[in-house]
Image 1 (spheres, rainbow, N blue to C red):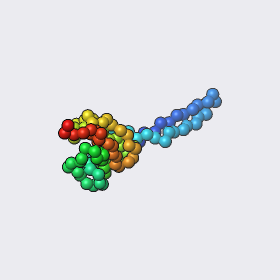
Image 2: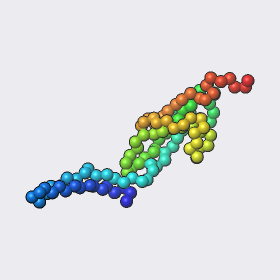
Image 3: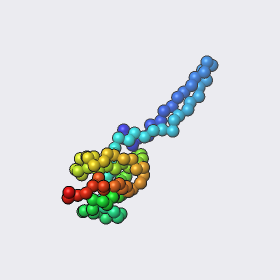
Image 4: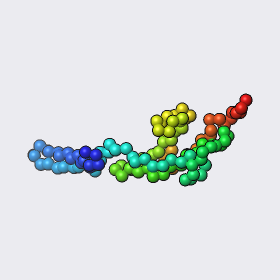
Amino acid sequence: VDGVKYYYTVRTVNCAGVTTTASSHGVIVDTMPPLPGTVYDGNATHTDSLYILPWEPIWAFWEGFTDTTSGIHHYEWASGLHPHNATTEIFSWVNVGLATSANTLSPYHNSTLGD
């Protein structure tokens, strides 16, 4: 059952029939994903940018992701062309630990547009 803590106990019996037991610290079953938060794109916290210049870095900030059962272990970010399908055409998933922002160079950083 999700969210329930289970303990494992081992009982040892010697040749005289005397026993002793020891139990684990317990493990919680967690099958529920974290609750989603809000992601902002742009170069300032809590600001959503509509446009960037090709030589500007790509920024993302996020907040409000929660997991009340086991907590947040780390965040990963990626960039793609479709927001709700978690596509990664621009760059694939990168582990950023517990940071709540990340940035990288634009894929057009060293290109000349309009030629």
